[in-house]
Image (cartoon, rainbow, N blue to C red; front, side, top):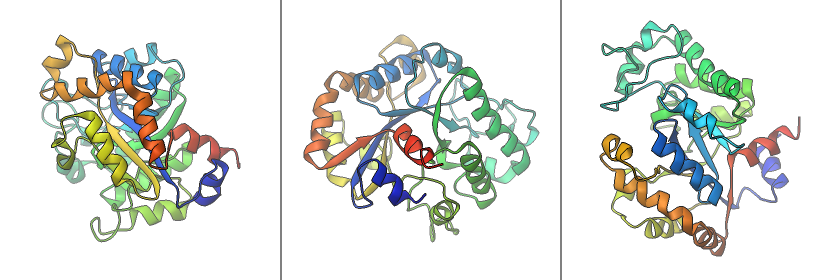
Length: 286
């Protein structure tokens, strides 16, 4: 089934402006778990992603009540306090500190594709075993997107588990040197079209979350766009872990004003959905 046909099932066309409001880092800390679930239940978020190797991943499943949760495949770990390690026996995925390498380039230089495949599959299977109804996949830091030998694994897993994949049309020739987006489309993997990361430097100049969402709404193009944010409940834990904790808290506090954000997108002719909507529409055909 083509993307056009799947969108039609959702009452949309390829010219429709569609947004998925997603957060990352579920499982990283208790504060992030609490803030993320609060935002999902109040309607500020439509999807989130679990980091299965993260220290509070089990805490995330204990608070799970069927929300739209995907898997953020982890192959790097650059936090100065929490250093994630592989779930599987994968010597090539370890750095000298006993966990995933901090830099994506180190992963590219040293990771064995077969060990990477086993580890990525294990992270998905662990999330499913815990009880998550996994809605989609994404590669943390896009580490598995930017090199063809790892992108092949990502596509293979998306097909095997029949899950949508977070991608961006810009992740194609000439920036990558190979047509990642086109390859995914040719294989029948359902993907997003654009990606707006509110932690990217171009968005950091906006301190007020309301202003950020207003600017985002103006920037949305036809197709499916993931808008990525991070949020967390204000706590001593969050302040100790994240230098930019005020930004996490400011977005979490927007959960109480989620209706205004949805109204803003609606007035701009933007449809807000979740990854589960895409997954269900695509699987309904098979």
